[in-house]
Length: 243
Ligand SMILES: Nc1ncnc2c1ncn2[C@@H]1O[C@H](COP(=O)(O)OP(=O)(O)OP(=O)(O)O)[C@@H](O)[C@H]1O
Image (tube, helix red, strand yellow):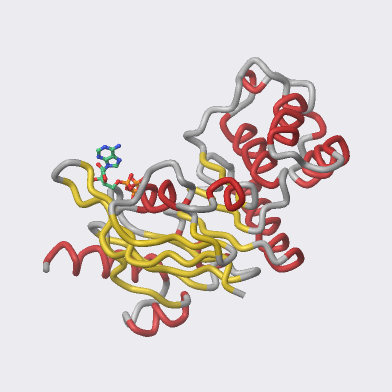
C-alpha cells in the first residue's frame, strides 16, 4: 500500500532552485533512501513532506490524503528525527518522552514511553537531563521520540550521524526490524553508503535539486558498473557535475 506519494515537488529559495520536479513514493514496510551531495536538496524535500515549509509546486499525499488540506490528520500519523532538532535540554529523558506522548495524544502514554525506552536502550538515561547527554545518546532519545506515536511513516534525516559503529549498527537493525514487523514506512537521508545499502529497499540519488538516479542498491551498482553504492555515489555526483 502506498503511504507517501510526492509528485513534482519544487522549492526555490530566492535564486536557488533547491528542489525541482521531485517525485517519489514510499509503501508500507518500505525503507526508501534519499542520497546526494551536500546541498542536493534532501533536507528541503523532507521539510516539505513534514509540512515545515510549503512547496512552490507539486503535491504531497500521505495515506491517500492531501497534506495541504488534511494537515493535522496526516501529521499525527508521521514522525521525524534529525540531530539538528533540539529537544528541551532542561527536561529529563523520561519527561521529554512523556511530553511528546501527550502532545501526540498517545493512548496509554506511560506504557508507550516504557516501550520506547526499552527499544532504544534508554533505561540508564531515564533520569538524566537532555543537556547532559552525549550527541549519540541524544540521537537515541530523538529516535525514541520519533517512534512514540507509532507512526505509519517515519522521516529520518541522517538517523545514525552521531552514533559510534556499534550503536549505529544496533539502530540500523532496530529500524529494519521495526519496518518489517510493524509495516512502518521510512524515508531516510544518509551519507553512510553501507548503511543505505543495508537498510534501503529503494534509493533515489538527488543532485542540484533533482532525482537523477533511482533503484535498489543492486540495480544501481549494476547500471553504473560499480562495486558498491559508494562508487555509484561518486560516479553519479561527478557525472552530474561535468554535465
Ligand atoms: N532556508 C533556506 N534559505 C536559503 N537557501 C536554502 C535554505 N534551505 C536550504 N537552502 C539551499 O537549498 C539547497 C538545498 O539545501 P538542502 O539543505 O536541502 O540540501 P541537503 O541535500 O540536505 O544537503 P546536506 O547533505 O548538506 O544536508 C542548498 O543550496 C541550500 O543552500
